[in-house]
Length: 499
Image (cartoon, rainbow, N blue to C red; front, side, top):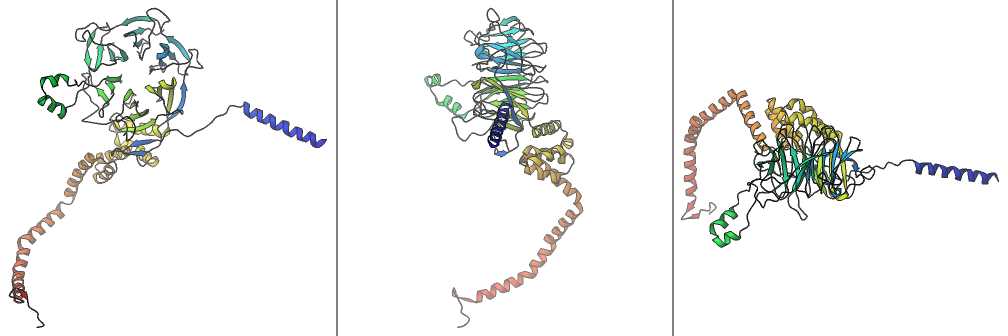
């Protein structure tokens, strides 16, 4: 009987512990679903520590707003609050720093009713500008979400009667000028003043030179020329503005200069010549990246979203690649159909995944924080201060080309040209290596000038006196040997000495 009692006691205790364990919250840990890598100066992928890791998602299911539907854009206001463009539900959802709903922007009826908006911009005073795409207008709401006014298609002869106005993204500068991305427009960003008047196009892409088009125009008849396709500039997909007033744009369908930093007069100041952003595609239905959105932080670090690979590429202010993360897939940290991104002041990157009706958040790793600190000093030209940080970066990742380049710059500035050449060679920076070699050559000649002069004098003496003297001594010997050799040949047949 005692054995039965003990058995029941053990079983009941085990069941109680099992139920307790099942009732406790379970935390699962999984490896990052994407491999960290960077791209060296030979355009090769090399392994690297991940700079960003998945932190969480916002889908609206547990919020007062309800679930999101096909969101298209996200905006981080200066106070740290988040605006999500919930396109499928034709509204803007305003969230606080803890991802709780503050308000819903967009009326159920009337003038403030939105129709599948695709973009949003919020000014410092809280004024909300919405790219109300299907309504073909820019709708403006106050900080409380109350509709104020709207601007439709600008009435201007420069646009023409056939111009299709379909605003999808926008930004507003300090003058209250709106810079609008209109779907299908290839003439650049539309500049619209605070009164809704069109002020011109800004920063249009250029059509590159083509020998084929030139030859076709030279040899084609008038009828053939009429049938030739008109080559138009590529359209912008998005635009943002940094603290210095530069406007950064993304362009679809081009192999080079997909990202640009435009000055107030529309000149690209990021790219000198042709530069390719994004990754290499060796397989698949696509050949070039298609950047959809871009974010720029206070230090000028550029974060861009590529639709083709569903990856995020991050560059410093000079255009040097820092990190790559994300990818195509259903796991947390990967995307189905990404559509937009934004970056908070704390460094968290928000990625809108339209295919899964949610916004994913990525935080920096300690390695990324280290690289960002070193990169900020490097961009500012404070090479010596950043040298220790870059050495630490190489301690974690010996394949980080930018670290070698930065250390080489520090050594070059310290006039240690020989060692700088070593680091420039490791960074595969030919231009910097040549510059350092030129300075090292000057330094070597200056330090060894006396020895070089003695060697040159010795060579001069040897060539001017010694070699002629030796030649005069050797010439009779060579002549005698030549005569003796001729005597061994008789009538063109070598003479056999043994005969």
